[in-house]
Image (cartoon, rainbow, N blue to C red; front, top):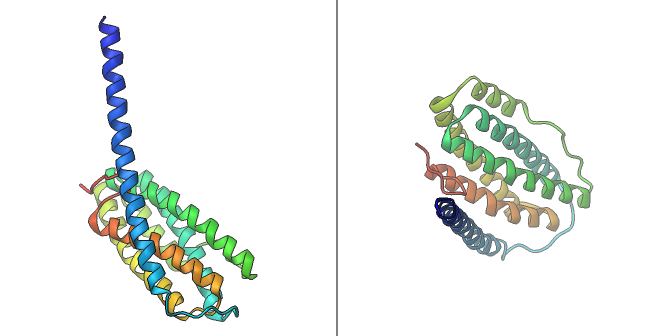
Amino acid sequence: MRYRTASFLAGIALIAVGSSVATAQRKVIHSRYNLSIASSANMAHIHPTTGITARDRDFLRFMTQVDLSEIDLGKLAQRNGTGWARGFGADMRREHKMNLASVRKTAAQTGVYLPDGISRSDKAAYDRLSRLRGSSFDAAYRQAMIAGHKQVLAKVEAEMRNGRNSRIRDYAVFTETAIKLHLKLAEEGATMMGTKAG
């Protein structure tokens, strides 16, 4: 009887955990949906064009290095950080791997050559963070995520306004949704699964 009771309680606990995870995921999907609508509205005044300028090429190359850097920093956060940083690092690894696949697809469609490594400034930022541990890492990582995503968002919005190639502009709209969400979570000290900064 004790065994059946323990199994029953364990089952209830698993259902509760599954329900909370599903609720958190629905909140993320809802946030992305709202941001996506706003992003599409920002594009309403832009006429489609097909030429590729140096701005377009530089934008895709910049975004590639951003994604590679965020993946590396996400791995570092999972090693050197605590609760929030580890969770946010896992989010960034997953999210920027998906975004990297999108930017590579866009580059293949438009014939843009992409770099295969991070920038010098991103390498310097990684080196600085790699020397920190625990709460010191968490604070510095969060500050870097806020500043970095603000910079990336400015680049994305500039491409949406001024880009010449319609496919690259479409990619900018797609990624703006994610970048806005990442920035919002970093500013709030939250993760996609609801973990809060300590």
